[in-house]
Image (tube, rainbow over all chains, first blue to last red; front, side, top):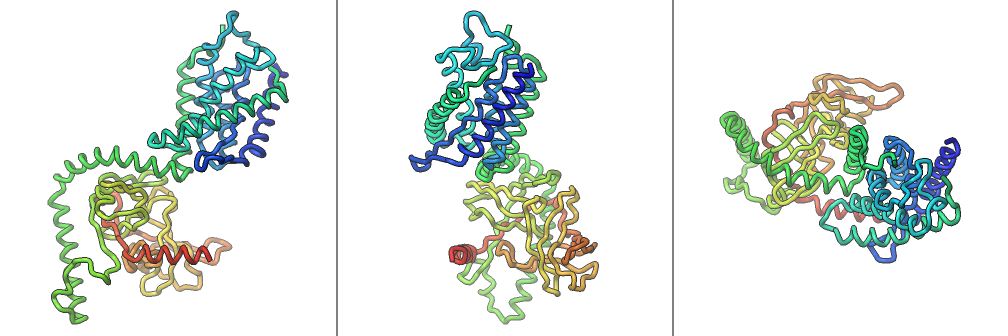
Length: 173
Length: 278
């Protein structure tokens, strides 16, 4: 129990620092207006243990999103996306549910699951977060094309970075 | 087996989710400029039509009173115009109200179709837009003072940032004395008073002194009466007055507004941009 608290707390702090100090500083723009944002902090709330109370999941996702928002001067964008993504997480978990079901004490980490499962879990939910984020950033369906292009580019790069982080740090429960 | 395998296992979670998304949405449309503009424009289109219909119907009930007010105002203006012409020895054709080359200001009249006064940041909607020549950042005045500044415009409607908005700052001066400062609203919910700041404390101020627009902002012509001073104080450590101004205009009752079009704005703006790039 305390170990889970320690692991998740450390994860929140490390990912926040990485996001704010390193990745939010670099907005990559190879295609003119279609820049890429590297967004990897969702990993922090996506890896919360299955037994975490729903209310706490929402509040933690909102909190970490808001901190990133404040540092990126985009109040509400990441907070909204995080809350939405954590709300969708159970649906994706149910879709990907292994035959034996989940062990309540575990977290959706690479330690507990194989790569195909973990990769689909992370890539689907980071797509949800990034799609929500860019929808709110552009804020009008008139520029649907811009939303989709930005989302796909950022999603591809962000997911790669998330996998890289997971391989390097190997997060536990 | 899995706790929370439904999206919302309880009503409380649903409420928490909606609350957090609501806060996020509020933050997005309050603190992000681009999103705020799109939001106000969209709301404008949706509510503009509805409010316009409602206002049309309500309008019938106060037609007579409004007519009288307009007639009086019209008469007052005409009298002023003729007096002025008399003084300067103008010919009758000079009184033609068409836009001439030398005219600086023109007014577009519009009806107020939506008005809020109870929020921290208040907005109004007018039933005229780009088609009538209105653009962003133009002043809006009423019969007895100023109403606000246009914020978002589409073809047929305009959203106006009210003077009762934490972001509004009006350049105003003390009548006959000429000292100018900025008129702001201190969000206390009282729409009868505003605060005039930045007047140096060596200036002799009497209660009852009149406040008018200074004309320094090119949004408003100078000399529009705004209100009179009913309270003065110098905050400790400050070198300027904090003056309480009672407004002549009752914003809770306005039905009509005039948008001020300044033909010199483009020229002034380009000059300002040049200065900035130096």
